[in-house]
Image (tube, rainbow, N blue to C red; front, side, top):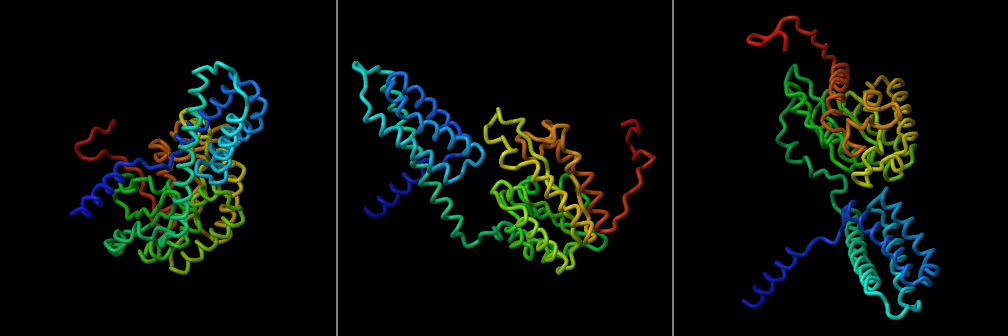
Length: 359
């Protein structure tokens, strides 16, 4: 009985304990507050301001890197070590007497932030280790059950599978195209090489007539070289053709920084350089022309005069919102029809029965 009660108590503690891993907004807030407190510490202790100036600058640089990549282990480690260095200096530098209570509270808050940062860093390491050692790196389990339940394609209704990342994953294709056999196999956060691992189970085994591939956005965010991304494009196409599936490559979408005031992590262009997006799209267009694949070019419909993702078609500078998907939908349908040889239906000149022709 004693063992059972102890187990229940331990389980309840684990259930109540909040996760130490911070999200992007919390990391940004922690960075901003730590830098503010360090700057303020120099008001009460001028000697500390001079001694800690390089450390404070290092903290600000680490915070700038974390705005672009909130889960960067290197930047998080640099931030943690420099906050510790600041606290070590604060302990050694002589302080005036009497020491202001407000300054004492500020130093205490820096220590609290340092403890919180340490816990976040340990949780981040655990998270990264779990990703590296996961038995299903490519997340084949995500659609395993859906794939088993999916029946064969119907005669006269060509199946098209969509392979991609969050931009595909978030698109409710069945609502936009209820009369088509469009199968969504997007997984948020994936890079092109992970999609390679899913080509058989999530694409060719489903016997589609065509596959729409939208990949590369997360590769850019991770700093993967363009040549490596292009190699993955080639292998994705080769696997599709080997499985007798027609290829449709979608262009990468532009990104923008218009929403960074709402969340610092929405500053997208540093981690997704527009020049790299254009370079990949130019390569894809040429590659499709050489091999006779359909090139689905979303870019012109979504980019603004500044070369960024138009502010009104995205709420975070990266993912399309409802308006963005509405702009993409007719381009997608045209490309899919071209690949599977479905003629576009001529516009009706007669209203449907019971409908007002003016609507």
